[in-house]
Image 1 (cartoon, rainbow, N blue to C red):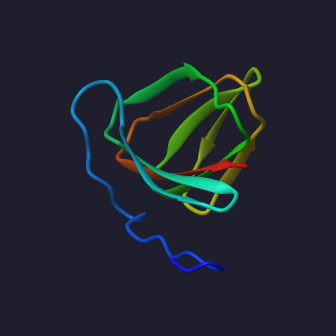
Image 2: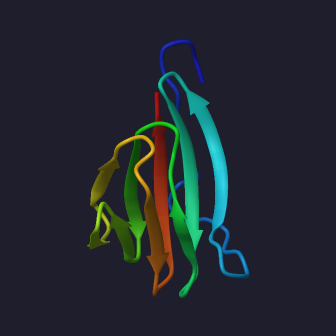
Image 3: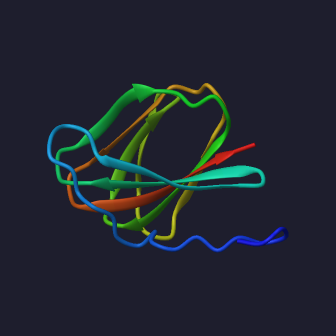
Length: 105
């Protein structure tokens, strides 16, 4: 990392966790964002929760279902979803999945 740019690696495949919740790793904090990796095994979920700042969710592998603002949608690799600060949402996976979460601000 330098004063004007940052390279963060290791987003493509994470470590799976046993239990009901996915494996969550904070990879870096850079100017304007915190970068978090989430790795889901089939059946794992993050139940209703919210973030203190806006977020971007990007799917790298697999498929996840996101419930937000009364809607449910499936996100696939290449999709990015923006969610406003403090908006309650949930994320679940029926297949192995890796996501990058950017906590903005």
